[in-house]
Length: 399
Image 1 (tube, one colour):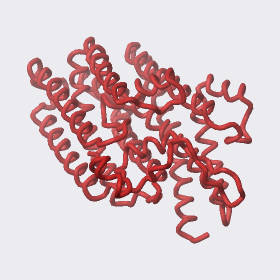
Image 2 (cartoon, rainbow, N blue to C red; image 1 turned 180 degrees about the horizontal axis):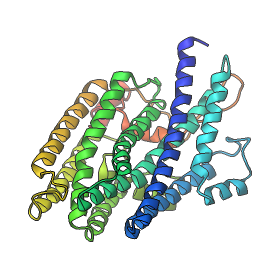
Image 3 (cartoon, rainbow, N blue to C red; image 1 turned 120 degrees about the vertical axis):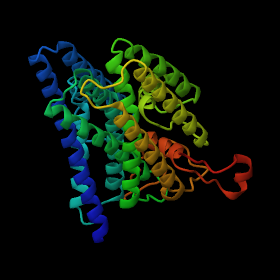
């Protein structure tokens, strides 16, 4: 095998290991923070941290278990019997099991001089699911906890060292999860184009810069109105859930579990953009951006009408303009990325999500991750054959 492909395979294994290590470190940091809150008598804060951690973990295990049940029989062989897999997920170890399985398959592929097409496809299959689960965990647990910690710091007027470390690592982790998800989607492209270093930097930065103002606005509102922020989240979440439902998502294996997916996507949309439907997404992305911007401005204005200075003594005249600059810079980088760095591709018009008739040289049917391929079709611009273009409309675009 050429040197570059082997180096790329090794890099994928390293990234998988770092992602698993980051998950364990984040889990340990959350438990440590909850313990510190208990020792200092802040039982409500500790309960909120543990509640967010528990709810996110349960949702993650449900997704993992439902996907395993929906995968073709024999795809993951050899693997533990169904009852042991169910026990692993019941013990909240299903995601960690997937990470270990992905690392094992990645090492197996890298160690082979000439990996089979099936082994390569199966490694991609596992990586795609892990990236999606990591993204869900990020917005169900890491982002809400980041907002909670910021609100605690703003409300108390001081921050412990572990809180500042947690804030910085959370922002980096959220942006990395979005970048990792984007990298995973690129493996679903017909060209399988990898994300270059320049594109990765742009994608990472614009997500980081757009996320900071939104999280800060929610944290400011939470610090001022801790009893009303839950109502605010619930109201917006219901609106976003209805919007996702109206777009007719079809991601999960059945209609009941589809609502779990829609509820999760609505939570993601509360903080960031996430495309779930086929067709032109530029309009939907613009509407979502304006919606979040208006909501964030209203929350900040509410803060300004009640409090002029933060408890820590840092004037809002410094924080808010800095957040505005971050937003504008992030928006500019986002436009640059999607105008010049986002790939276009030609999807075959006769290929159906969930079907994979391509066989490897050994005669085995290649694994095909219908879930992520479906999202990749929504995420990347699609170019139909020339005869179909006038009927189908313009090329799909995203912001």
